Amino acid sequence: MTPRMTLAHEPLDMRAWAPAHRTTADSAVKVLTALGMIASVVAYLSYQDALRSQLKSDQFYSPDIVKPMSYYAAYAVQLTLLLSAGLIAWFSSEARAIQRNYAWRLVLLVGASLLMTVRGFSMSDLLSTKLVDSTGPFPFILAMLVFVGARPGNWRFLNTTMVVSAVLFSTLILMGMAGLQTFSRQEGVATLTGFLNVLFWPASWIALREYPRDSVARRFRFVPTAIYSLGTLFTQTRLNVVMVIALLAVYSIVQHKRKAPQGITWIVGIALAVWMVLFTAIFLRDSRPYQNAQIAAAAFSERIDQDSRTGQIRRFFQDVQPQELLLGRGSLATWYWPGIDLKWRGGTDIGYLTLLFYGGVPLLFAYFAAIIAPGIAMFARSPATWQLPAAGIVVLWSIRMFSSSYPGMSLESYPVLFCVGACLSRESFLVPWRMPYPPAHSSGGGL
Image (cartoon, rainbow, N blue to C red; front, side):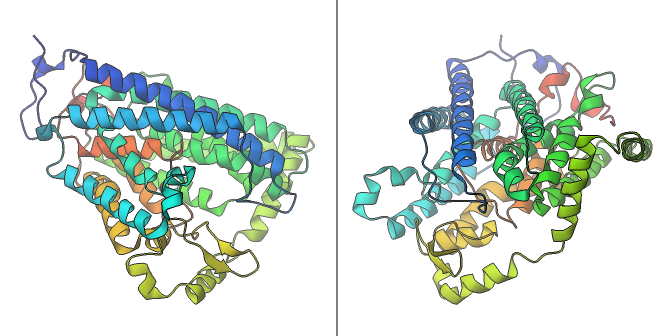
């Protein structure tokens, strides 16, 4: 007999912790999600290769990148597979196992995105590939992937996906750093930024998730974060530094909720970092990698306090009137950015403002209610349950949205959606990679 799964407000029944029966729908969701993520990797790598080869020496971004056919094929496959996975997960979910009335929030988000589409698309646009543009409705339609993460039984598979992604993109970043020639910021951005943007989310998951006290992986949980930090040195991206600091703050709160001692962990971590810096400065001073890192660090320090936002926002509001943000200018909207583009389609460097620009108050409100609010609420009230690391990821995404991040259809967005789903679940469940010990008896652990 398949054991009954308990809801969060019901007492924990240890007899229910046998492996759940894998239904046809569950298996289909996992297969479709896995294949969709593989297609996403192919599309992402294809785009990054085109970006590196076509950017000019003085460019950090260009809207005129010509993408190869392999990109479009993989892009179409990932959308089809992941949309199918989300739909199956949604319709196979039990209403009582998901946060009450959440489906209406998602319907509101899709409705707001369709309103944005109607206001911004012509009939010819609707019949073209522009329908799946990053500023169209599909980034919000794909939000139904939250239902994949809402099934606790899927998190053994999703955890593996996170780990594989972290290993892959950590490797690509290390290879990219080894291949740098000029060590200019432009070269660093073109070579590493895309990989860094993807790595942050699985790296954060690996840092925040629980481990048995005797786990070897527990001792290496911050390695992907360290690689992310090192790569940031060569791209000179201040947002990445802010996100690493935010991750450490979230980690500290998570460990506090787990009632795990942190004093010794932080002392050992700081002492190890100081030792590595001193060792490098003394014994590797004349090595080429040290000299290259020193050049990058000096360039980074020169721009650390530069204001690159005020001018953009001032120009934005010279072209866009505040009342236009009530309903937004619609999908594919542009604004006049003197010195950059007469018709700039890239939104702004503030994600929440970009939501207002395209979809207005309805889109901003619906997105916050459907994507941001569940994670913040879970993180604020949750004890050390299986959902806590996922809630931490959503909190980090809410912070990143204050800068240049915007909902998308790539590897940068999917882990966040899976984690939102975990925050919606009302099912009590053992951390899948720590069975058979219930959450209340977990150690949490340190480094």
